[in-house]
Image (cartoon, rainbow, N blue to C red; front, side):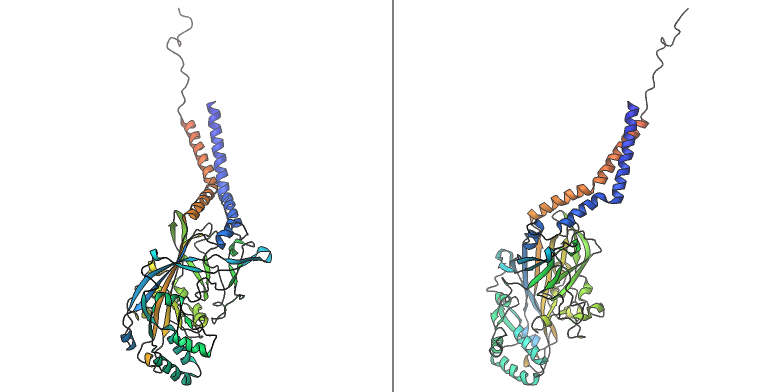
Length: 485
């Protein structure tokens, strides 16, 4: 009986070890997990995947900070601007997709993505309705810039100069935070509106962006391949942009940043299309994180994505007009912002050229507060945590043709920066942890089998090496002769 048990353990151990090795080499159970993940990464009406995509459950917050100008008179005389950061002003952002329609036998999905912002006083510092800030007079600076570039500049310049003096408009203005964000009726724009009714009298950095959408998107559902899950192929009936000077820069690449394909590798490049930035971006792996006990790969926008052409020649297409390239860290979006001299950057000119940072007093660029990042679960492609950070700047050009700009330096003047953040909610994270645990169990079946094989192997060795009691040859009396004389 003992020998039978010993041989059975040895045979079973060998069988289990060979089986586990075969399964590991063939990736059988991992492939089962990956197959299920791929099947789930398709937009189909009524599925949990579709519901999470159409109306993401995690709360999204938009946080605004403004730069208050403290030395306007000195700036007019050519000194460096000194600014103080005011904020935060936090708004809850609601962005359920609407007008969702499946096309091309379910391979494509069209939708609009309206956004609604609701002020969160408990998370904010200050009241946007009453807090005043002194900042760049963007309508005035924009009109000056447009006049200087106009072929009738010699005729229009004195007219605008008279209007500026008559209405006491200058380079700077004082407005409430609410006005700067959501809009106010501007005197100069009203004058222009009387001549050109298509020009709005209102100005605001987020004017007409509350409870509105930025156009119709056409997404791929992922039914033809998991790598195409929620990838944008068309925006406002366009498959390519037209603002930039190269075909590559005009490409619409990636998702909207709220979801990605599953099975992400550290060597992957994740692409995002952002209508706010008027371009597509790419992110690369930075580090491995833990978000609510869930593993995540952190992807960030690399420094060379906004680098000058001397550092990254591929960015030549973002120089507008062609050949007019800005210092590293800056993006001229005037072509897609109705001609306004708007320059985008990371907050506090993070990763921008040192000359740009040093031109303003009061900035403190740092990675923790000012870097855009995505924390994505590599198996599912679900975004666990993210922060989209951007700064709006205005280019002020020195020109003797206007009294307000005669002595001023050429400046990329920071107006405000924002941070759009999301963190997976507790309910969603609990569901994801449960799903990932089940996936780990399935994926680890070969290791479980191997462990059992090792266990039976140990038992086999113990049985082999255990000292066996030999049968005693009897007592001394029993060993004596049977017949004694």
